[in-house]
Amino acid sequence: MIEQKTVVDESTRTDMGERFAPGTRKRALDAAAYAAVLLLYSISGLVSAQAPSPGNYSELKYELTERRGVLVPMRDGVKLSVDIYAPNSSEKLPTILSITPYGKGDFTAHPAVDARWFAKRGYVFVAVDSRGRYDSEGTWDPFDARHKADGYDLVEWIAHQPWSSGKVGMIGGSYGGWTQWWTASAVPPHLAAIVPLVAPADAFDDNPYRNGVLIGNWLPNWAAMMSGRTNQSGGKPEGYAGWSTEDFKHTPYIDINAYRGIESAPWFTEWYRQNKSTDPYWKGIAYQGEEHYSKMTVPSLSVTGWFDAVHPGSPMNYMGMKRFGATAEARRPSLIIGPWVHGINKQRVVSGIDYGREATIDLEGYTARWLDHFLKGIDNGVEKDPPVYVFVMGENKWHAEQDWPLPQTKLTKYYFASDGRANSLKGDGVLTTWLPRGDKSDTYTYDPRNPTLDPSNPSTSNHDESFDGAVDTRLSAIGDEVLVYQTPPLESSVEVTGPIEAKLYAATSARDTDWMVRLVDVQPDGRALLLADGAMRARNRDPANEGRFNAAQLSTIEPGKVYQYTIRFWRGTGNLFQQGHRIRVEISSSWYPYFLPNLNTGADNLAMVSMSEAVVAQQTVRHGSKYPSHILLPVIPQRK
Image (tube, rainbow, N blue to C red; front, side, top):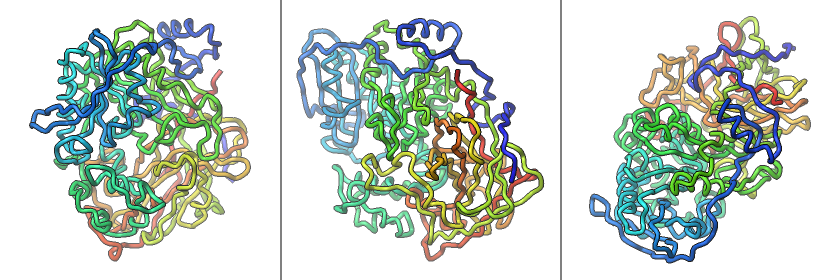
């Protein structure tokens, strides 16, 4: 047995941010002291535990006039269909714009983006069908670069209407988050603020690729649903919009839509045909990175959940805008992360786990207060709010923070160790903060025809075809194709909040493969709750950057050779591993159907090969003093 101690490594520096200095935290204060806390925060940067507070925001006071189907010309002559919800007022008012491919009529009932709710509070709300969808003209392609120009043209059209104050903000979720960032990257002069809810990142950090690994589960089904001018259903009871994941067994993956009989979405094959970030299709719609952030001038309020299927976008955009934003307001972004799936802020019980009454917040109210400041110029103190709010699971409390990643983070290496048999839940894998002596390895077989199954369950009440929450991974880890490393029961609680990465020293007998690493909270009763995970295609490792993901190029994998892989998890976590729990790490090369299996052929394009070409791979993970494979966890010192 390897001795388990807590050792903090403060010297580690990774691409998750600069070296994190220790921070401090005040005791939680009651509501009567809230104003004093804000003052203290503004002076010294110290914050207290609390949820985002809506405070005072615009009251419901206006009757409305609604206009539907207004056609607005874009620069290329295509007309987009617009619905306008306007207060009955002679005042010039600020406008909230939302662009959606899902049908603009939905903006009358959404809990966080309700057109009438905002309009009755003194905003003109403009809802727009995306180019080529529903009532808008043009040809639909989800990643057509013209979506950027459309956003610009709509903002400027609004600003020149007689009812407009000239201040335009944007709001929307998921794809509607993408449309905001695309618009902001085009820099329309009258765009004043954006509220991207669960906004995805660019294609190679999120969808349809995640560090080079092909997304399965909901994404090809979403593509099938979006293949026409209106939503298309596969007519099956299971799967996203009636499209079954059974279709994912068809290869090559590029032909999935054709296999389904879908002929109206030529863009789907482009997703797979152009599989590098430098390819024209993806380069035209990209919005992240210094090149784009450095042009954006507007403040942003990003909202996501720990179990959001498109989680990467929100924290990446927070960090990118803070570092590169073009104005002081742009460099002061805001970020909220709750215990939510992609359908944020809907319930306190997720995947059978009750996160308490604080799990849901008055998000509409907080958003309204935030927009009141940036669009109406109301001095309500929102610009002095802590920039980051995170919900810590296990503790089930919100914490207001100074930054993301949290400044007080102690990056801690948990090393993998075993006597050579870490396979499955019955293996001898250990997770330790001491660097093990000697050098050993664990091996497993990865057969693309028999992938490790993810534990997603379409029957759960909150299932959104992405992640169900902290699902139990025990059934997924019973096979020898999964390596398991875990601590002994913790003698004291350990909070892990922030971005995560793993460093593997690994070899494969194939010319390409995938590596997947998962962080799990093991309960005293044996339940193994999935918190966060990372994945990376082997050939996307960058030899010049410690084996990190490189979306622009592919490297060569020599069978049997040990390579370093630095795998940034696509989602971090905020979790208190309580006393008596175990911290567990699982490693595999598949996670189906959430990820489509890599067929291990070594081909440049994963989507262009057939299952008949699949190669069974022998996988080896080395660990010890020479090959210190580990997971790097953002440990938070005990809160006072």
